Length: 515
Ligand code: FAD
Ligand code: DLZ
Ligand code: SF4
Image 1 (cartoon, rainbow, N blue to C red):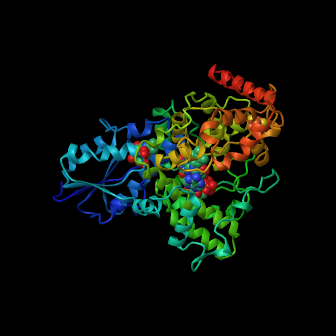
Image 2: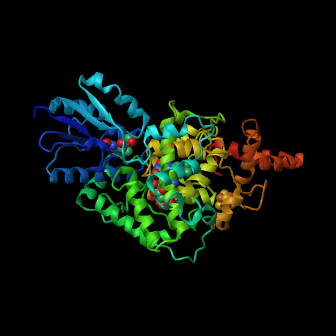
């Protein structure tokens, strides 16, 4: 023990030298504590790749700190008598190092924040919880922007962030005279497009031993562990960023919403794992993309579209998550109670689109935004699945998932379970949307053009049934008016047939039968 030592706790998704908890750290005096924890690894059914990615990235980060002369107390998962939780880890470290205080950067999940608030009393020494400064918008700034507004909409928030960062700005005006080029970003892809190859990284000795550990200790968790190709260091995550900017960014905008059978990644960046875990920063990523635009290496619709996802959507989601005091993840405006179907784990369904999204999720711990939103997300909402179960699924299966970003995307954006606090209308769609944006329907057992027959696309009847079921909650929404007008114009026997087909499908789900 060194007198006056401070204990600095680094969480698994805080793997950055720029963490506020490390500000003012003294190499010779302070102790940095990190740990692989049973509670964190199992509070939801985390994908095996997510566990291996984080454990390996944590080990690399800790080693790099040690190499630079910091004092690091690292608890590997299999250590005898290992602490299971952050609270126990810190308690043990306080016993061992007798620090004068504990410093931590705020966590990204409310369950932990609530727990940390009780640490001071439990440990009997000061606990300083610092703000996470990796975000562009602080809690106070978001509150200032949000409070007093009747509705919160991302587009207006995004403009503030453009002004604040100066990204793609010419003085006070957006480059190109428009804030948003989304209209140019809705092209369906076709199979003869040249697809960039994904940058994968060969596991080193540390990753190999973590893969072995994950295989042994988390064999009952969801997902395929190998092949494993994630970057686990900042150096490799930066290579992944370079690769994206060079190979995929130019067409990122055009095909952002497209889906193709057998193409898991298209022109997406695959950077969310690294940004969320702290290996690379959101602003450095955006600056790199803005530079590519300045050098004419990427068109404006791609650069703007990408930057909007990060300084717009990503920051907005985090703002919304913390702006709600209560239990955001328990919102359920439609009162849905249906259990999550088994095919979210097994991919055993005849719906080609859902099968593809779940299969690639199992293989990669990744699906891109439109798959998450308009395939697995829309199906769950149309089928009336309990949003909390949907939330737990998303929080587990994706390697980039932490509640601050997952919950608003799932509860708010994809399930509309918060009643419109985040989105102006539900992302409800029939099979026609998936057919327009993908080639899944061509190879599907169901016919997207059919409506109520036995082999009709399930999304079609479930879509109208969802609207009919939830008319009271949705009918007053001006953005839904056109859909309700169409529903009301339908002949009674057509409506009846839709609802009967939907009931048949839902009964099959409840009986655990294949659809
Ligand atoms: P790209 O398509 O290349 O986009 C670039 C970056 O923009 C991403 O890396 C990400 O940092 C950011 N971004 C894009 N859209 C969003 C968004 N809606 N919210 C926040 N950031 C965004 N993202 C997560 O990081 N973690 C999650 O747990 C998560 N869960 C989601 C659940 C649902 C139901 C939906 C609809 C979206 C979810 N997203 C989540 C947002 C988005 O799908 C992922 O960020 C994206 O697919 C990650 O892949 P990428 O890095 O290739 O992204
Ligand atoms: C997701 C995760 C997992 C699987 N395991 C650990 C771990 O063993 N140790 C750790 O420090 N963090 C882990 N994490 C990330 C935490 O769950 C994350 O820091 C909190 O959810 C706050 O965002
Ligand atoms: Fe999905 Fe329906 Fe198309 Fe099949 S027909 S792939 S279920 S949208």
